[in-house]
Amino acid sequence: MDKCFSFTASRDWCYRISFSNAGLKSATTDLGDGTIMHCWVPKTHKDKKPTLLLIHGIGANAMWQWGEFISPLVSKFNLYVPDLVFFGDSHSTRPERTESFQAQCVMRLMEAHGVRRRMKVVGLSYGGFVGYSLAAQFPEAVERIVVGCSGVCMEEKDMEEGMFKVSTVDEAMSILLPQSPEKMRELMRLSFYKPSKIMPSCFLNDFIDVMCTEYHQEKKELIEAIHKDRKLSDLPKITQPTLIVWGEHDKVFPIELAHRLKRHLGENAQLVVIKNAGHAINVEKPKEVYKHLKPFLIDPLPPPKHQNNGNSHKVD
Image (tube, rainbow, N blue to C red; front, top):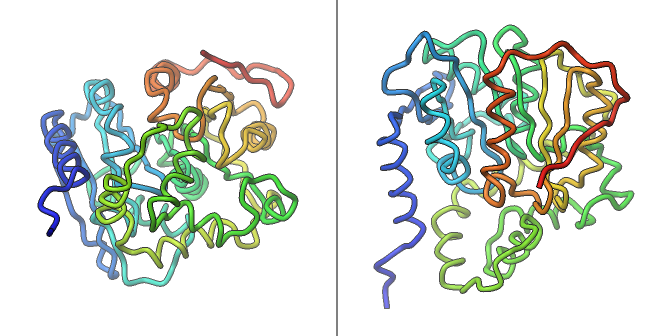
């Protein structure tokens, strides 16, 4: 029997309605070099409000990853929520696959919308790689940044030395870009501290069909690019105030990488560890995450505290 109903497509439609009702509109921008970028932007940009850029990770499009945060944030910020290249409605004919290229595309997108300075940025997982690169390449544009569960400080040798649950990049890609219900279940077990025990194959197949098949090869190349030849010594030290937020039981990017990033950035960074959460902190603990995002993004920043690198605190 032909499939006539898609839960995933229906939920995607609901997200579109909720984003629109929140005061955002869908906008597609041609960057002029074979790259098309889609972004949710304010229906009316208000100069008196600060600008906040939300950058998603590997997985579904931006709406699915930021849906829980739009309502509390939209009243306080001019929100911009892009689909990165090869996600959602963004794509490119260019061959580049690095987070540096993604960051340049995001910057050009923001410039096309008239935003060039004083952005606040939140990047989750792969989006943290892109956000960090954005802050490094365009320091005058990024005022402060939140890096969530993002292994920007990892090195290529970490996988060989057994830091991760997977032993090869190919194995990681087969899980992060699932093409079967069993691989999707592996991804759920890897991403969540308490994954759902009931995951019907019909729902998983539907999600894969709608969200995981398009630009599959290009996404594999994006994952390869963040791992290949990566060394901590090559990572620039961004100077913007940085909030690092991590799930205590993250199995995708183990928490050692959070402490490594804190040591790398020193006094410019603060680290918050979310208890009883895995990699998908935006889904498992959205209220706890927002509780820390809000003061960091809105309040005036206090003077840097002189403390030992690696200090952090946990929240329930």
